[in-house]
Image 1 (tube, rainbow, N blue to C red):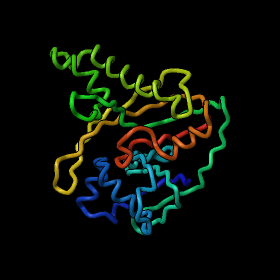
Image 2: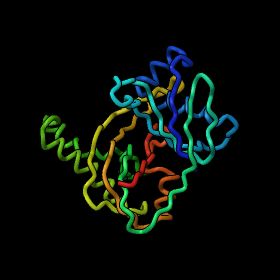
Image 3: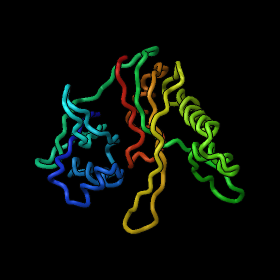
Length: 230
């Protein structure tokens, strides 16, 4: 695997693409990053996460988009458009290792309907629904219920992904996305930012999880788990 920091030369984008990328629209970013793999014709070979570039020490914020990309092949930079700082990613993990993590995920659950296949539902919207019905969508109890639902989704699946959470993760930004694609109905999904500590329980499974991504909406900037030694 390869882990890359990808910067975009905004002068190389069309006006429409510029606005889409700066606005954090995941489908536009997905299309742009595909260009790092020009000879690949099969399934998407990468996961990504979009952030804004941090300022240099003592400098003013640059406000430029920055992408973290994990791929199964080395990306090919594009002069005047995409700069990629790439390194081989082969983590050596042992049971009991404690790591700090960041994750942007799409937390969903399958909801079965009589006579129909189960549909995916956003866990935070499900937690908010009872409060909306009662006209309390902005209450503190509603916010707390959504936070609990987001944490339980990750905690309840951690062992199957090769780790456990020694403390409850922090839940950050919760975003609702509506992406237009080829003039059809918008693709709607939700993302939650998590941050915290994990303990490795199954190194091989965790490495598989990193490669495959966590949860759904991976084509739209979700699922990439970033790790570091605390």
